[in-house]
Length: 346
Ligand code: TXA
Ligand code: MG
Image (tube, rainbow, N blue to C red):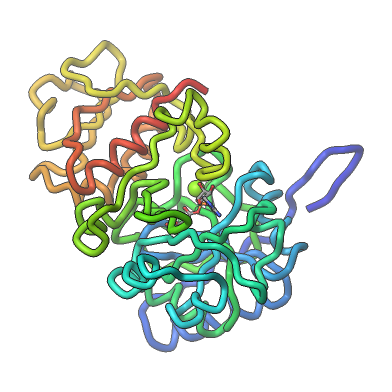
């Protein structure tokens, strides 16, 4: 990054390394990524949710590089990633609920917010000065190998520029961050496709701050009282409580260039169409760009394809994307959350 007269210029040589197939290629890519992280560089890598943009969590300078590369507001804290629950417990204070959730869902698409402990090495900047820390143990073999090789916590937001659609392939990361990060490790498309569920264990019972890859129903099967934090209930902008609990949950996020029109039951002239279970198939005009999140109506498949479909339709000429209704149950809660933010006024 070069600064001239207040201008920020991003001029890194971004290198894409394949971690496929697993085995020697994976080990070599993980070693290179870990080496880059140790040198204070930025390394993007796949997790089972979305690709993350990683930096050494304990280096304020490396963390500052993430905020610059993403043009991310510094009040929005980052998730610290480690390779095991045992390592996670060295970063924060886990109450009984946090221990149960960690045991049930780690490694996996769950992030727990817990109070930091005295020895927590994660930089103040990464936590946006909060006394709490968001921690995740991802299951993806490439993320696991990099975290194991590096040995210390890695902060990793989704590897997109702030406010834009999260990346689920290495090609998406390159579109977003070419010249802004040092290494992109290609591990193929992400299986879950939506970010991790963020659960605050700062209170009892725990509360979901962001719906994601682990559903409310799954969480409640382990901690029955688990609730949902609602920014609407706390005030229009999340209120003072919202600022504190979910600092990064902006109304507009995951925003394509095109406008997004939700719960479409018809199609207007010139619109691109994002369908679910073929509901709009018979209405799509000849020549209109059209994708179906899951022709069979499978929410898991829809989640995995959501961001890639939005990106593909956004690359066409349409100025609006009409989106079919998606059921709100199970993973549908997280899909609808992302669609709502993609459609929000900017
Ligand atoms: O699936 C994921 O979680 C991906 C992969 C790469 O791990 N990461 C991700 O990070 O989605 P990011 O930075 O895009 O979203 C992290 C969210 C932000 O909304 C942030 O405000 C919130 O986590 N967060 C971080 N620390 C927090 C804290 N102490 N309390 C409440 N929310 C926190
Ligand atoms: Mg993000």
